[in-house]
Image 1 (cartoon, helix red, strand yellow):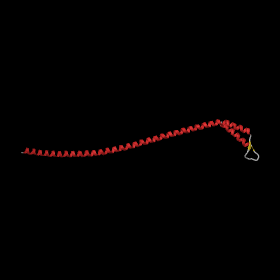
Image 2 (cartoon, helix red, strand yellow):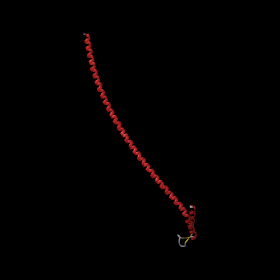
Image 3 (cartoon, helix red, strand yellow):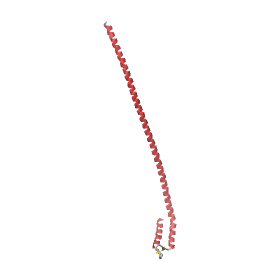
Image 4 (cartoon, rainbow, N blue to C red):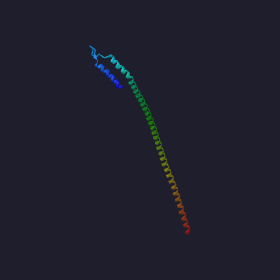
Length: 153
């Protein structure tokens, strides 16, 4: 089709190129009107088919462009959703890590306080036991001394 139109346009172009000039005018020429009209009729008859094909191609291209735009918009929405979800998850992980760090610090502080309290308690009980043992030892020494005095007499 395109080749036929090109051939017809070329024929018309050649006809104008080869036409004789009108006397006293360099810009005007004489061509065979009937032959030129026949070529233009053939162009007109062939053109709608080519135009329909061109329109179909343009329409298909427009459909593809529209589909591409929709796909791009869909991908953009998915990417935004993914980023939003990732940021939210990241914020949640950061918050959870912060809370975990606070819990661990509180537990370590409580453990240190317990160790100190247990150390103080044990030291007090050992001191009391030592004092009791010392008092008992003194009592045993007194009893022994009394026993020795009683057995010597």
